[in-house]
Length: 411
Ligand SMILES: Cc1ncc(COP(=O)(O)O)c(C=O)c1O
View 1 (cartoon, protein in one colour):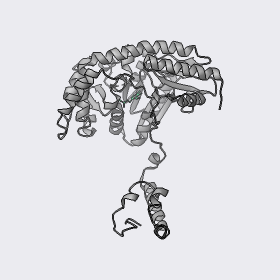
View 2: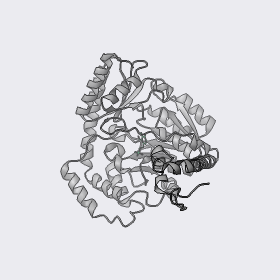
View 3: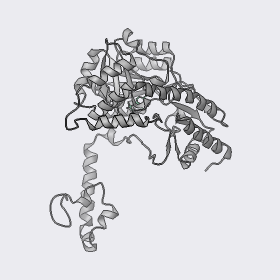
View 4: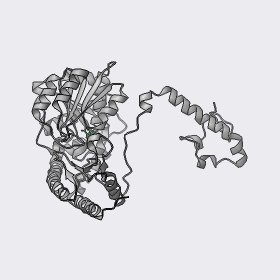
């Protein structure tokens, strides 16, 4: 196998080869005679590389596609359930002054104790329960999956749901069972109970409100599912800030329920902080596989700062709740658009038959990015998901959609 520098005969990999493939730009750095002399060796190098990756990486990982994040440069971003607001200049200034003082040469607090204390206060979490912090709730899903990944173990979730449940099941070598919701995106209680009976899952995720449908499910169906489950049931409350419903009380009643939350949707997505709340018997086990210092010092300090100013975030979420209603009403008045109920900071809509991708692309041409869900799941045919923005952003979106829906353009 080739691993030296073609130009200088040394054995270390030259800089022009340091990234993935022998593209034209890199090969053109060679003089013509060097090019013809060495092309075969370079091809062989990359063939060997490809073969080795294919041989060594687990097949189910090779079969996956990485979590898709579209390029949003210069776009109005209404695709990822982010809070559209930033902080007032004075708050930003105080925050950045504080960041300067942090000892970034030192490891952070390994448990994030101060952060947990503050989260407990602002979220009203009783001292009876422990808190585990994750690098986003994505990391918590991964910790749960890793801890429960005995051979043949299963994760079960209603579908359509948050895509990371399935992806993480695959990463961690668990089976995944998705149980379709009803046409109205309600829990299919019978199907859920039958699937629990058949697969006896180690882990069930119930997102409330659900992503991407935005709705809450009947509380008695949720309880029946919890009671039927032999494994752990995680109530994923990523969108809790946008609804009055919360499931903390389930912790008192059921020893196998855990509650997962995140700060991503209330304006701190860039900090990556998720939390799991539950009994220490569960959380102590998960803590053993949490990587040391998973919450970095900048995140810990910034979250503490933000939680000190939690009112500021609450004002923003309240505004988004008001604007969600206005947006839903305006969307409902658009020709042919069906709007589903939402308790989250996004709204699921169904475009006229066969038009979702077209409308999504037309919006993109107008520099507005939303999420096209058509093709992702049979229940999401013709569906689009729109994150609630500021009232000005929502107006831009609505007027663009009005234009698109009346222009009748189909490409
Ligand atoms: C239901 C649900 N759970 C969890 C997450 C992950 O959030 P985080 O940013 O904390 O990883 C998301 C993100 O969109 C979500 O929709």
